[in-house]
Image (cartoon, rainbow, N blue to C red; front, side, top):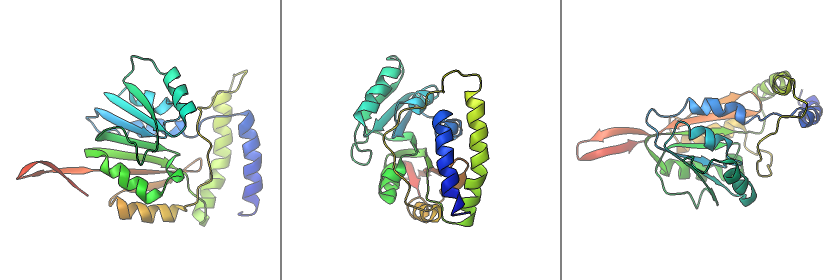
Length: 231
């Protein structure tokens, strides 16, 4: 399977080029389900052309997107209603995060471009007590389970492409993103590093070559003052 899969993936890439659909947007509704009950401020890291940030703005008081690509950030601003509670910044998310803290931090198909442990530490520091970190990432397949899920994803991907492009004369446009690179960490590496930085984080392999990570920054009442975080 490991030798056949690369050839199948190349054929799938060709099919996807003519029948495109956004694998990352497939998980946007999942992210909405992770929102804390009271969410006044959210940060979307690697915001691209802003689809997720605009979706979050329908549920959150203020949303900040940050991306390293200025062209894509400009595109996000052009696509966003000026009256919407959304702003977009250009910069390194590990060094130039807009002032928080945030009730929700999202990072979709972006964290593999960063030092993984450093990114988790940064996100944790900018998360408000009671806040949630929701990551959708990619990993390098290594185990039999990885390749099995990849194999299952292939027919599912084809089916989704047909469904989403059905009846369209022109392919459905896919959101702009910065140039990507392959993931270098295996899922086992990711789980191990995540549990070191974010005890209690929940990680799952998902279809379409993705994994999800959810972590909640808990809060408790301190007799000497207001909320303090427990990690």
